[in-house]
Amino acid sequence: MAASRQVVRLRVTELNGNHPEKVNPHSELPAPELRRAVPVAPGTLIGFTTTIPVEVILAAGGVPVDLNNIFITAPDAYQQVSLAEELGWPRTVCAWIKGIYTTRAAHPEISVLLVVTQGDCSNTHALLELWQAEGLTVIPFQFPYPKDRERLAREIEQLCRTFGIETAQAHDWWLKLKPLRRLLRELDRLTWTTGQVSGAENFHYLISSSDFQGNPENYTAQVADFLEQARRRPHQESKVRLGLIGIPPIFSDLFPYLEELGAAVVFNEIPRQFSLPAESSDLVAQYLSYTYPYDVFGRLADIEQAVRERRLDGLIHYTQSFCYRQIQDRLFRQYLTVPLLTLEGDRPGPLDHRTRLRLEAFVDVLRR
Image (cartoon, rainbow, N blue to C red; front, side, top):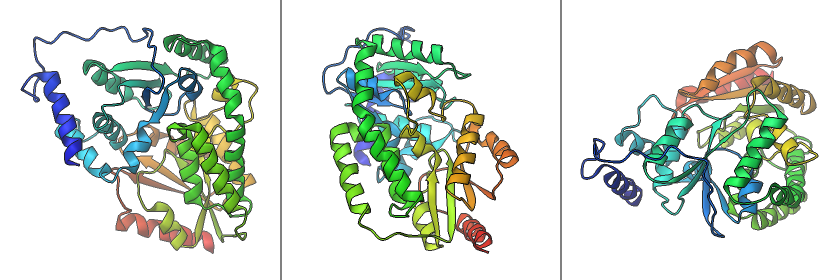
């Protein structure tokens, strides 16, 4: 933690002279041009704020790094959020976005950043500007709203030009990744059909598919080895079958506690979407079928199908404090036909006593 704090404070001092609390009035404003060409050397770490067309990064020779995954798996994730507030971030901003900021600062080797400015979090606009002011190479990417194939194709083509590659090279990587994506679909299937893969294991592998832990080849081998072991396990059937919807929860012990209660999570909505589960005809179609960055109604259709197909008894909707997606809870309650429990989380850490009691009562009702 001390090292992380030192890295961030050094960076702030570099930005503002010897006065971290105020902007140096003599600093030049950063250039507004964000779409300039960014050729990357092989092995360059490219951080991003949510799932993007990772095939472009791989085709350019870069190493994809999902900053969310680094943040939430760090032993000092809670302290990273507090550190962001020490550096001036408002208390009333999502902990994920604060954690992403300080995590990047703790990893100065990640100096090229791909920021999704449409289709993820409204706070990423300001995050992009902060990074731009710090002299980092920042590349914006937008998922079109409303969903539109032509606009998405143009956005992917622009991203390819930015990295100095042809769209065909990204498409080649789309073909290379198809066997891995099939393995992930099989891993997901074993979660809800036979119970040979637990909800926590499902969550871990699917959420890691946003960046393949930086190495698609090694990650493919990991998934294949895990599946080989999982297929040898006995079948498991839980009395209470749950779906977890909403953004990935910031709680560290949600899955073990649900298992302790005798419930199994057999549907992880957003991690599953990160794995891009739909069979698609091409690269653009793949990211057009990805529900997370578009309207809530595509997500509702996906969840409704899972409720029927996976025989879900209930849903847990995780919402993050200060996130606009909390508003969509009304629509989930309006349109979904199974019991739904909404949980709100703020900072990384274990479940609090009140949330544990609510989960226990919810599972108890479903068990009856």
